[in-house]
Image (cartoon, rainbow, N blue to C red; front, side):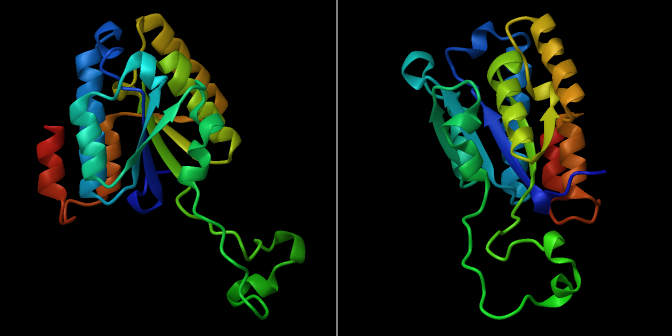
Length: 209
């Protein structure tokens, strides 16, 4: 199974300026988060940020906040460690549509009623590519919350970290055991591209090299 840019959304968790100096390999992690945001803009993948207790930890790293805004994204201020508890899931799901009049069209009518998807539901983008800090707290709890909401969750391991390497790695073990896929920034880039013939190929190559 590969990532599909048309089915993906990007969530970048708590890369806050006051937090990053304490993060293991913080400069590398922040650089990869910035690459992800710029990749999302190039490939038209919706992107969202979160900030934990902004009065205490301040805003996102300025370059990352600017990249999210350039991609048309929004940043969620939260107090829960699990951003889903503060409304992230609603941001990631499309609004419900009114059920169309008349019988279902296409193949839906051939399915047993219990297998038919309710007409008012819109599936939207079900794949969440997520990265952030701290990996064992807000990133992990948010990723687990998204899994509970039936999203497919892909964690970008080289764009995540904690204050200690041990906590970071423990988060990866737990997330993998819960059903999240672990990937890297370059995996995301080339899977979103799909082909060297993609119009954005050279720009993406410039970002990852």
